Image (cartoon, rainbow, N blue to C red):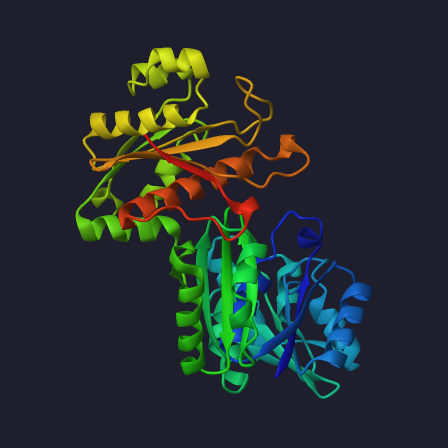
Length: 424
């Protein structure tokens, strides 16, 4: 079964709202074995909606529309469906009564436009809305099933779960699992995983984000997926940190909790983002001791004990400074691990160091080391600040993960992928 998703709304077209509805429906339909061929967004006009629905019906088995079912003049999905079916809109008096009761219970005055939600194309079936007022609709157009759902996410999801998904027979759904990787570029992963992608019953999709790439593995059956995941682990080694919904911070937390360890962090350019990521994990009080945000250079000496001579000679962005920050925060907060970041997020250079220069230090009773990642930067460095800070958080967590596991940060699959790691 092939489906097309159609989202109605000017607010999505102009970027005021991100189309999270389509993303959620795509995931749920795929899990149900329904193939989503296309997802489109159209504005709040009769011409745009009718043209898009006609095209979707011609190319898919089922069409799911979200948006345009509210009470205002720009909510035209019902009108468009009625026009395409060649029928009129009729008022459902039972639904009109429910709308009147709901308005009265809220203590508000009923406005005539509210009853537009009780108008449905003649012959359409209403789908109950457990989370709101406007019902969903199901009707046939040119022999294809069309569903129309409210654009409010909670209402859309409620109707999808209660009425739409149970009606769709997508056959046996594929077996899918997402692999989580850090610190390696998409092209490097694709090259490394080429033997896996060559298998007939397996397909891969690469979903990059700053310093991370999720690899979605789709297989014809669960047993094929199991073999594919084992093969991926062999090909990727410690670059692969988890699967499914695991995050890098949650994996680091689990590793430390299993060993009864804590980490303390010292941050400069990330300004607290690293600590926030670690404390976002449930149960993080077991593994996160605390953090120091030493943004100004003098605070690296005053709060963390970084050598004043070192700061004077090399500046704050230096691998040895990162190491001393990690050692200082570990000692002062009494944690097993110390993790520190310093660098230049931009928009301009600092102490002669270019934007994108980042040094990460990690310390434990076994010793200290640093890692200097090579971060991919856009041509316009004035737009790079947020990504540099996010990539630094990911690279720092990955260095800590490798430290806990007792392995080096090996990045030698391609020369341009290597960072620089050293012991002090």
